[in-house]
View 1 (spheres, rainbow, N blue to C red):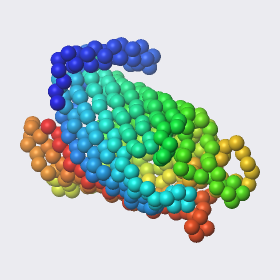
View 2 (view 1 turned 180 degrees about the vertical axis):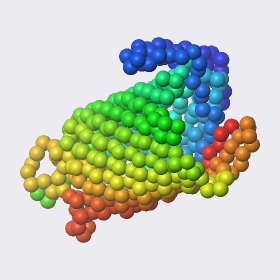
View 3 (view 1 turned 60 degrees about the horizontal axis):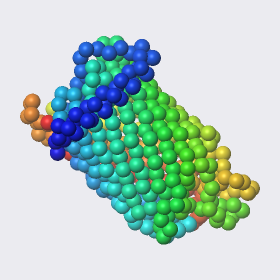
View 4 (view 1 turned 90 degrees about the horizontal axis):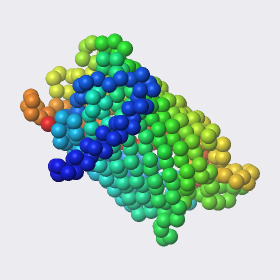
Length: 375
């Protein structure tokens, strides 16, 4: 739906004001402003259906995205994401009963191009029976050095309401996320990027349904009410010159809960004929446990959790994607059919499956089918 002229004018004035506030920050990095406006992406619509199945959890639902350019500098977007969850995972069946619920997320975004910068302002809100999350994000992408370098700055402010079935909302959590990234064209065929992310969380950061174990007895988990984390991601993409490309990335995560994680990924893409693009990747993940994590604590401490996602584990993911150019009319529109499949396996070295007393392994499959249209 097209916005009215007063609404568009208000959005334009807001984004211009934000540009002025961020201009000083960009200047600190020696980034100048050119006379031209950075081009906005074309109008776009997407429809997706996703399925996750593994570890006793099934999650599925549709997602819709529509993006429309209102002018050569202003674009509006809206999205809908629905996630229907049926949960009988190892966490649930050992401490509670199987449940089903639906999470719905709505989002609205504004893109504004000024000089050689693109600014994105986004608002999202998700709701499920016992949890509500609202967030606002602002991102700026600035081209410099003749378009050879792009600097990205961004932050997200989120607030959650935490509840439990039968008692309603009982606590809250707040999140701040800061992002800084640089993408550099190295040669005519190679591009590299480095991205740094910092997150600060406060409030209720646990799960009211999860229990810890102390001396073999189930007790409510208790986590610190603050957490600070950082992540550095390095990535390189290269064109091999035969309608194919290769990519590699490394990500390091660390926080003040003593969690340390490494992610290494490699991928390969190739055009087949005139209509197909095939892509495959392999990803390895390894994590060390939080300082207060224990499968079965032998000491009564202030903080204790048995959340396996804070334990020690590693895993491999194999994935593939196929894209088919379905319909295309030059200068008018282009439609593509996409399908993606991921198979993952994680091994937990210090989390016991209480049903059989053995170390827990997670096997899962992720399927995505979607249609994209640019016009």
